[in-house]
Image (cartoon, rainbow, N blue to C red):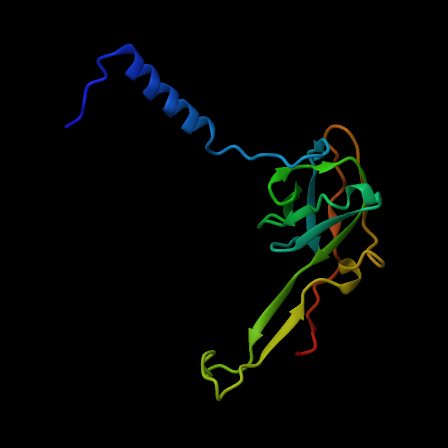
Length: 168
C-alpha cells in the first residue's frame, strides 16, 4: 500500500531525492585540465562530392594539447563536427595537422563460416582516401583554431581511390 505524503518532511525528502537524481543524470563531467574548446566544423569532399564515413583527426603542433584527442567522422553531407575526447564539442586553440582515413573490408571467401576452425576466411581491405592524407608527415591540410568559431574552406581529398592493403 502506498503511503500518502502527509507530512512536509516526507514531501521535502521525496522532492529532494528526485531533484538530486535528475541533476546527476545526463551531465558529462569534464576531465581536469581540459582547456577551453572552440567550435570547429569541416566539410570534406572527394572528387567534388561530399564523402561520408571519413575519420578526421586533428594532431596538435603544441605537445601540451596532445592529450586532448580531437576529431570525428564525416556525415552523409561530408561534414564533421570536431569533438575533443569524442564527447566535448570543439577543440583547444592551436595549430593542427589534419589527417583523413577511410577504408573498407571485403569478404573474399563467401560461403566459409567465420566460426569454422578448419577454414580460413580471407578478407581484403582497401584505402578509399589517398594515403598522403592519412599521415601527419604528408598531409597537406593544416588548420589554426583560435577563440570563437573557426571556419575553413571545404577540404578536397582528390579523386576517389581504391588501394588494396596487404593481407596479414
